[in-house]
Structure formats: C-alpha cells, structure tokens
Length: 151
Image (cartoon, rainbow, N blue to C red; front, top):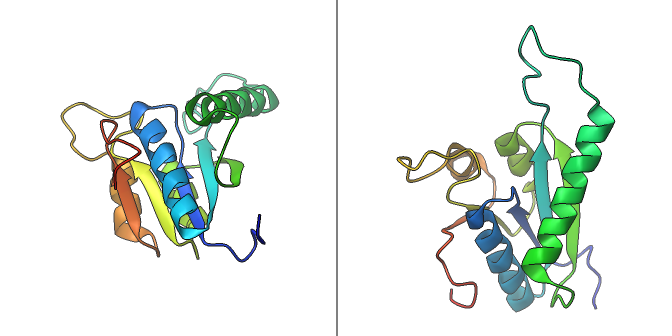
C-alpha cells in the first residue's frame, strides 16, 4: 500500500444503525476507487451526563464497551479482507461535532441518513443534517437500502 498520510481521507460516521452500515460500505468502496483511506469515526457520550441528577458512571467501562461494539461492528460489516486501510477513531462528544471536526481536510464525509436515535418521521437525521450544513468537505448521505456496489 502507498503512504496513507498523503492518501485522500474518507471519513465515515459509524453508530450501529443500518444506515451507518451502508455508509461504511460506501466509504470503503469510494476510498478504493480514489486510492484513499477510511477514517471510521464513532462518537460516544455518557447518557444523562448533562442531567443534574445523573447517576455515578464508570467512564472507563463505558468507553471500553463503546470501543468493543465499534470494533465488532466494523468487523461484522466489512469482514477480514479490506481493499483499503480502515482506521478506527472512537471519540467522546456530540456526534455531529465529532464528525465535522474529523472531516476537516478530508476528501469526503459519509454519513447514514438516520442514526440509532432517529425518528421514522424524519427523512434526514439531525446528525447528518448538521454535517451537511457545516462540514468543510463534500458530504455523502447514504440510505440503508443503498447498495454498496452502486454509486
């Protein structure tokens, strides 16, 4: 493989939803076409951290649990053989803010059209909408019924 530092970066948001699985597949295919690398980004945050009555939480446990789910998901969606380098980034914070920051200087940001917290009545999730509005690179929004083999 070539030098991944100079290769185009394709950033993709991963959150366990069907549309993020489709986005991950799309990002890998696109990166293979442009000779790029994939930065798979998963944002995690503590539930209820803003609430005044938040229960005591073990942040190390939550982070490790999130990392394991993230790694398992990438393995499940992509398998062992990958045509491009896929780098995993687990970051604590608001998903839209994390993805927008990660996509700075990237060739593209790929997101699903609706994440795990999406309401069926919303055609475009709030995270994908924020990314489309604020990212500094092209944003591709992938629906879960999109075929990874089609552009």
